[in-house]
Length: 575
Image 1 (cartoon, rainbow, N blue to C red):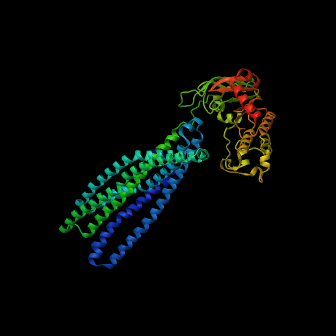
Image 2: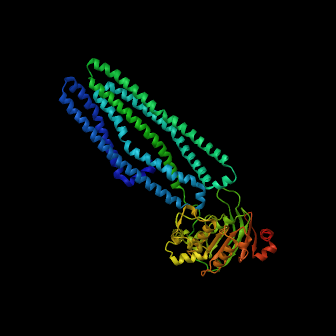
Image 3: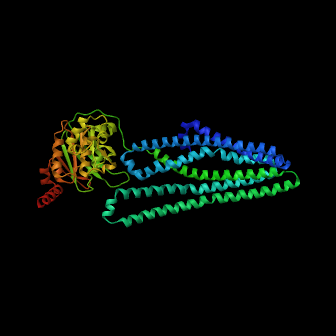
């Protein structure tokens, strides 16, 4: 539990006071059997009602004090556990937010969500119970044994046999359940992934009528998780009955030994009752301790998984020392670049070389899987090139910090993403200090001004999660406006006009061409009409450069571009 102890260290006062108050409660609890023995041996034996009432009052006082210190201990332990888990969750969130795209894809969204929610809750519960019981339960177990020795040594020897056997049982159960609980957490991740995929892809599932197949997949995964939980539960369930059986055997042995002692006049009836009460206290505390160990078993498993994430390097990319800008008149330069995704042997891009000058427009076209989006990710330094280099203004992208890259490159992703809030909030994600005039200028250039003007609240119009209250084309235009508002040096449009009609797309291209800061624009599309006006067009096929030049040049020299062009325009003319 070193991982949890690191976070509890910031709440030392609560972490110390909680077990100390539980120790006080335990001390008062250990005094109860002795008081009961006196009531039986003196008060009841002599018929002294006043003695019985006085010692009865002592029992009530012990109960009130015990309850008070127990509540105080619970408050301190809960405060420490909740605050520590809150910091733990914050550290995980901020660490995950530093992950590069490659690391996020490697870890998986479902796994990260499970760890920051379910696993943190398991650790929080473990810390809470640990602070309450890790001193109290052992203290009462060994304290009861010591108190039994003060009553009668021979009867107390039963305690010396029962306690080690119970400790062995607890150890064996913990050893058997720890790996099972780890597999249960992994099973939860798989189910979360399946649920997430089905919720996001529900339209596709319904369109292809594969609900039954998805239902079967979900049931298979839940059945597997159910079997794992039942297996771990069966082992855990052995703990209480075995503990009860051993303790009851211990009580029987105590009664047998102490009964003979009473017959010989060595023990009194009250002392025998005290011995039985101490054995019963051990029973209760060992059951609590057993449940604590089961809870800690799950917490330790979860803590290990959280530690794995926090120990994961957030970025596998190289970041070289910053280099001076070389005034070579180029905005972007690819020099014999090749790239393969982590864990893959096949090249997504192979030996790509081209140069784009400042203010020029580059179109990238090709079939599905040709490497268009991979090339864009490399320009944004989402990944490191496997071979070759990428330069921006003469600097290797690995010498440009991520903060600088955000200001240099404005990216409009293939899938338009809007966040819950307002239109104003979404625009200011790119530039927090953007003025209202800047927002309207960006909306105008993105052909989204009309969308906002028609809304009742204008820039303060609410945006639902994922932008579900906007159409596909509206989301794309608002996303483009968000990229334009920070006036990037390089603007990447990754198939970001796919939901726009031809006229709106043409107006968008014209507006971008007239931007006063003249950004270098890269347009990725599968439509020839979207790239044919670019200064250069890069044709990709299977991750390789199949052609580079203007639309007129490629129509003469590149069969792939000619096929894409002729097919699309023939369809248009036929229509």
